[in-house]
Image (cartoon, rainbow, N blue to C red; front, side):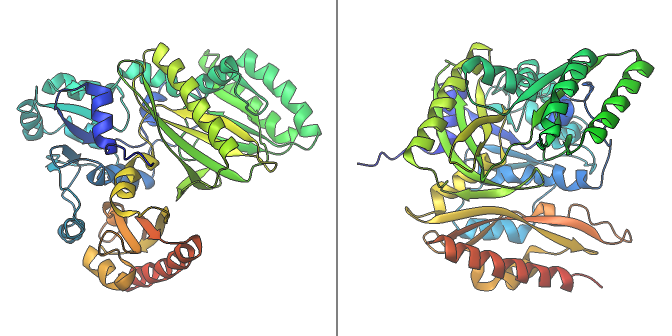
Length: 459
């Protein structure tokens, strides 16, 4: 007999807040790692990029995770036609709150902290609503403190401590979980030793990768295939240390191992230390950058057992370090079918977290789903109505049908500025079909139709 699970958002609320019927305020402060790692000496970073505008409008993912009694904080009002479309699917509409102002380079939390009217509204919700961000940084702690909202998660210092790639390697080692050969580097001396060891891997023809401990979405990741390149990077980091007088580092140096499949699995650590396994999905990546998920994951019973046992062990270890909340773990399947169950621990929401409500509502048993992003290049805004018309029958119309749900539309136009020339946006879709072949055919058809719609939005 199949056990019907309580909806994820209810399980989450109970795990974080107990039995009290408290509403959640969802805050999509994506790429919170930039705040955690802002004072960590890792690989060189670019302070502001055009991509910030799109990343910061990923806040709209929270719309389809929140329940009808919950609140969602956004940088701006969603496209009215997109909201109407979601309502036509029977999606529960949470209470919407928006910031008084928004800057494309600020997160939704940072905008909220500069929004007096919004802060007053949030203060009025204190005692009835708990703040549930994508991840907790000092910004979200400040928002909770200034409004009196309960923070439904661990303190920022705890979240940062358990999110670094250095922490991931240490915990995997402690728990005896398989991982690639590698070294943590928290000082120049440790990097010196790691580089010497890595030379042996490079001589044997094995590439290595340098990872910023708080890198995200392919940022702060550098693949190295020869010793000369590794030595060049080593010298650059040493010169920086000598100039600054600061020998600290926050890097991991690892062997770049062969794989056939990327995985992402999630569990939730309750305030009482309990561990609840949520799901495992196949992650779609390109050059280390997340592009989407396939579900269900094609794992045999033995592989699934490794995943669930690893989740339990990691969850208990995170609880012992004072963490409670959502945890996503990146993992890999090697060419022989073996698993690397811990590539990276992300003690925060993950892209896959925001797909759970869609799975629960719209994916029939035995069917397949694909969550992915479609690039769009625009010179003027593309309204949802134009996308709706372009997709035609490929847009999901009702639960139980095949088609695509537009999961996030604000990212389509986020970077478009009048007179600024072409801008790159993304449409995030959630595709549903009875079989993988039908899913892939749908994906190709949708990609073509969206490209045509974007072309039509150019002068």
